[in-house]
Amino acid sequence: MPKVNTLTLDTGDMFPHLEFNTFQGDAIVIPEYLKGSWGVVLFYRGDW
Image (cartoon, rainbow, N blue to C red; front, side, top):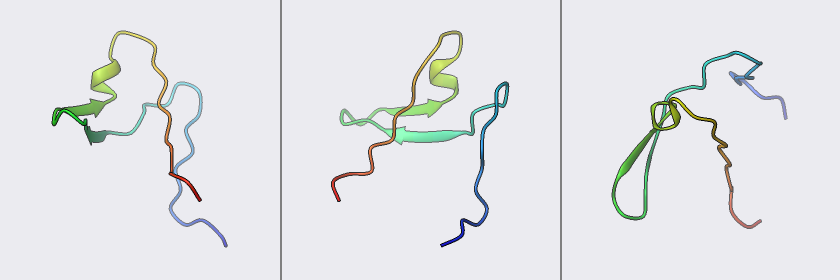
């Protein structure tokens, strides 16, 4: 199945704005949350 409207990041590209709620109820906004440091963003899609 072809992908439509996919975004591929390249070196130097700005990470897209994403907002997540934590288990504690706080909000994390990426990339602002990682500003000024290195970070890794992992997406776990669950168990198949």
